Length: 243
Image (cartoon, rainbow, N blue to C red):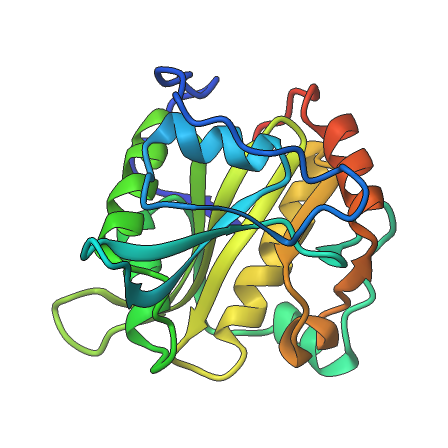
């Protein structure tokens, strides 16, 4: 069972001031995967990007001006987790989901989940302080969300965060940004819980950006960018609430 702890982010989300940034259309024939460069994580800019099918990817380097090198991508193909069918989890994951010792929550510790997604990976150079600050603002406005997996502590602290996933929800689209685990299968529990909740809330698009072996093992698939953009266009007008 997913437990909501503490004050929930505002719903409906609060629309921020519009961005002055105008991104190129990634749907044009032969358009490049890298569509822009620049370190702007204001809520308006990030929402404009995701509504256009674009996401930021800091590279852990600096530009000639000393600013973080941030590229904005619209990859082809794009990776999604299909929500239109009942998930086919592996036998071992189904067993884990039925019987695990953890507490699973929604939006109980967004900032900590995002920070640990960077801290627990030696190569997670994309979660830079500027990115964290921007996504925390989006969380305060009700746009970004996290699922947390907690282990009961053996001292007075009560519980310890051992896994989680975070991302951004716009209409009927959820873009998963990153996940982490400190215990076996903790990130899989977070991912599966999130996927089930998205399906239950009527979301139609679960974007996970770029394929890797871990995502593939969970059932994520690649689709052509044009198909992704069509799915995004259909999902954005929907009214869905993750809860």
